[in-house]
Image (tube, rainbow, N blue to C red):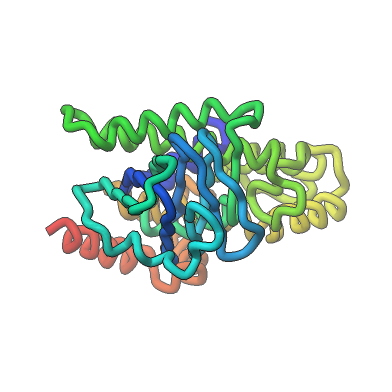
Length: 313
């Protein structure tokens, strides 16, 4: 299993909301802060995209963006409409369809967008992977792949066929993979440290791949450095510069993420989980888990499962 597949499967992304917005004439829409990553595609027409931080961008047919985390933004027919940005929220809605008609008429704009969530316990992992904003124009060389995925999500979201939820979950997984593939290749210049920054460095990416492939191995700086052709000091410094944490910290965090998933979604014993992720004793695992999570594995499992059961009722 490759590293990207490993991470996306752990997060189990799923679509929470999908909306179609059709607007005519002069209009404006303000989208508030939200924890979950959001995405939006211009199907027809054009509009202005005003992110909370950064310059205004003219979005044309086929352009789209993905925003991670607590980011507010606005979509408008023109920048001068900004004082009326909350008007669209008061219009009538039919399910996931929102329409805005201006008395003056004008060119129609149709947008499709929504947001997705992951396993709650892995939300921080996703936040650390995605750049604050990914903006892709239809004229970009590789825009077609992700555009097709977004269009399929839009079609599936508005149908009522058997297996809809399963198809939606798979499409969102594909979308997230495509989004994460692109920053490694195209969006890393000036990007903050993190997993994507590490993957953009061939030698650090090799170290990450090996740690994920054999998470239970006793990895040392010497071993990893030799594997990627660096001294231990150079490797440790570059890994920390790219990823933002030391190799040992990254490995520990990943092991704990795997442990949280196993505790919540399987009935494996704590001893089996500890051994599978590289801890030779239950006590060592419990100490490491408690240091990161704030409570012992057994307490975490009981509380998390109780919370999941209550949410399902």
